[in-house]
Image (cartoon, rainbow, N blue to C red; front, top):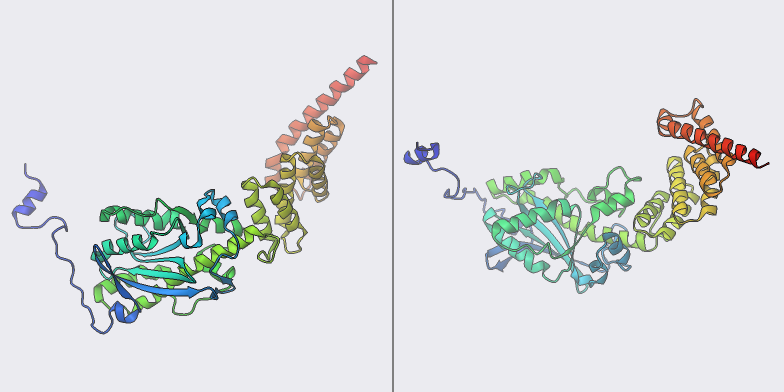
Length: 419
């Protein structure tokens, strides 16, 4: 039996879009992209592509931060766990950001504007590759490959989750090898979350640009959510004037990434220096160092954060707990006990529990362990104790008290027998 597709073909109906001619655009001669955005055509083996170039020199500051790394990138490389970032030259670091036809990803989404930059001589050279028509995609990808050829490291913002997979897909569909998998990939978003999760309500690039770099964009900037529709409008009308703000948005996203990397590197290299202004940032770096196994540095930062007047009370107690457990891991019992006793004075139940554990298992002083256990249970019976605290600690403490009472009773019987 003939299929529906066969029946349609017999009637002269074309199935699929493979042989359809490209849609005709109404292109106003007054407003092509070449006259709206300064740029030029680059020749590739796949045809020409429009490229807008910008250069930012060493004295340029994006807000309060320059683009050139002022310290070695080794601490950032340590967090990334990829030494290529520490070993490469400055000119081998590439920065990349895309503007796309949508946020869904997959084969139906393509990057119509790709901003890429690298340090070249005394300039931060930024190239924006633009598809005037979807048929120019192979040329755009080829030109991007050529631009990134000197690079060993790629820096993005949310690029591991979005930009890189999208471009890899586009390269595959275009029948070209992607240059991205061979590069060490530093995505600044996860690091930004580690550094500023507790202090800033949003870690988007735009908010970090404003709150960390202290840089405000002009009214020329186009909101990211609006960009896909503006490109579709351009494909339909050929009027490139609304895209001026899109190029501005993409350009300064790529610039902001370089400044943000510089700021992050300074913070991780000298966290007790001028680059770190807030106690919460000190504590955040301490947590990051702790995760990296740099426990001594983490302990110093936790202690420094607690000495600051701007550390919120909730974070003070959390940091104190973190410091005590870190010192416990390091075997610094005297320091850990001192911290627990200070925390116990502040009615912190975890500190009572840790002191009970210490006296039971390290000192074999069951009476002291029982006193700390009983004190913790008394705190839980107080009206100010929260339901969450009772759920977390009550059953464990009752079990501990019963065990300690048995140990003390058995010890006393043994002592009486020996007499």
